[in-house]
Length: 264
Image (cartoon, rainbow, N blue to C red; front, side):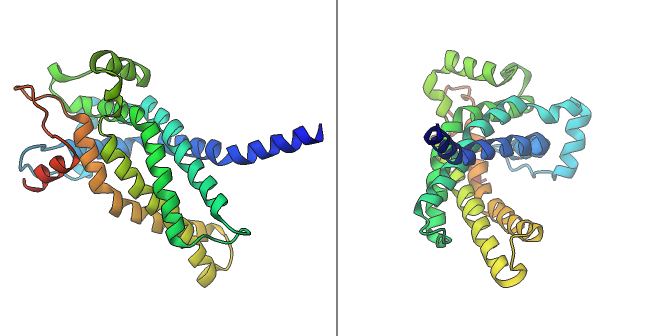
C-alpha cells in the first residue's frame, strides 16, 4: 500500500508541470484573448500593399463599433484548446528537462536553459499547431470578404472542416514558422525568466518574493516581444492565406513570406 502511494506521488510530481502549465495558460488566455485578437487583425491589415498600419487604439474602437464587443472573444474555444495542448506540452517538457539536467538542485547555466526551451517550444508547438491554425482562421475571418469567409462555429468544427475540405496534413500548415516562433518564445520566456529571477535574487531582493517574480516576468515579457514578433507575423500571414484567383498561393514558404513583406 505504501509503495503504491509513493509511486502515485512520483507520478503526480512528474505530471504537475504539465497540468499546472496548461491550466495557467488557459486562465491567461481567457483574460488576454481580446489583445491577441487585435494583434492578429493588425498583422493582416494591408497585406500585399503599402497601406500604413493603424495603431491598436485606432483599430479597436472601429472593430468593436462595426462587429460588436463579443467579436473580441472570437476563437476562444480554439485558444483554450491551443493552451491545453501547446502550453501543457511545452511547460511540462521544459520543467521536466530542467529537473533532469539539474545536478543536486543547482541552477542550470543559461545555455542549458535555452536548450531546454528550444526543445520544449518545438515539441509543444508541433502538438498545438492544429488548434493554433483554427484560432488564427477564426480570428481572421471577419477581415475577409463575405464570399471568402469560412464561418467556423468553434474549434472542433474548424478542425473537422479543415480535415474534410483540405486533408489531415493541412492541420500543420504553418508548422515551420509556428515551431520557429515557439522556440524563440520559449528561449525568451522560460530561460530568460529563470535566469533573470536568479540574478534579481542574487543582486537585489535576496529572496524569491513577489517583487522578484514581477521583475523577472517583466524582463521575460520584453524578451518575448522582441524575439518572437517577426516569426509571429510570418506565421499569421501563412496560416490565413487562401488561393489567389489563378489558383496559386500567395507565399511558398516562410522565407518567401518574409521576403515579400519586407520588400513592400
